[in-house]
Length: 268
Ligand SMILES: Cc1cc2nc3c(=O)[nH]c(=O)nc-3n(C[C@H](O)[C@H](O)[C@H](O)COP(=O)(O)O)c2cc1C
Image (cartoon, rainbow, N blue to C red; front, side):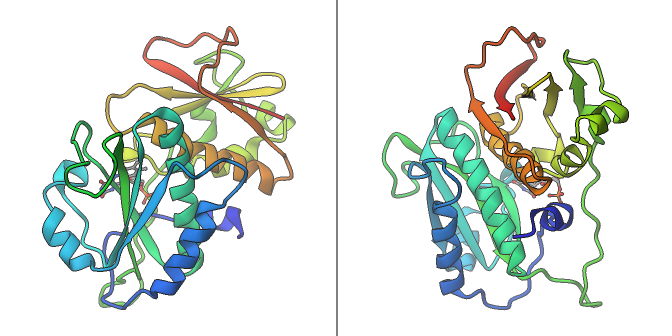
């Protein structure tokens, strides 16, 4: 996949044509998603809802921003344990799956599960599992002019969310380009987030980059950590930089305010 192209193009699609989506294509994409990269993906379960109309009628009012479900020809539900590692993997995998769908001309939109709801009674899952999120997908409806010209939602620029060694010490373009990271962060900024809040920032140290997430109380930070990690890793790879990472429990002496949390240490 051409990650650079996809990251700049992909956007949330919320209106779909009636055109059918090939079930075999979806099964193939799910199989690929279950095997991406070296993370152990088996804790995340992806389930296709073939009858989108029935699902919409059953769950509108219960899933999505303020219970508003997006009408889509098909859905993919993402289940797993309600812990940080599983939700991280779910975010990483699901956004990768959206890339693959986009690569096959299929539009999609994240749809939030509602925090605190016990989904084990609604869906056929184990008691310790939950609905982590869901996506709606299909061919984008372009309106009467056949082509949707809606732009992607705006994002903060890299020099607004990348810090130099210390939290809140904004980095300069010059420093970013000296480090060869300016294009990596240019692409990373396109990651989607709940309500487009962009709750992330990065602290660039000598050989490490720390991902810091703002505890906004909205959205699911562990899920969103997986999404932003995918963008950073794939953007770096696209620029020829191989990244390693350690997720969670980072105690490296880097200080952030109580409203923030260091979620990942990336190193080169
Ligand atoms: C974890 C997550 C949950 C989201 N939940 C919803 C949702 O329930 N309903 C919705 O319309 N959009 C949802 N979105 C889409 C965001 O609003 C969207 O990604 C953001 O506004 C940026 O717009 P873009 O994706 O078009 O670039 C969600 C996005 C993420 C990452």
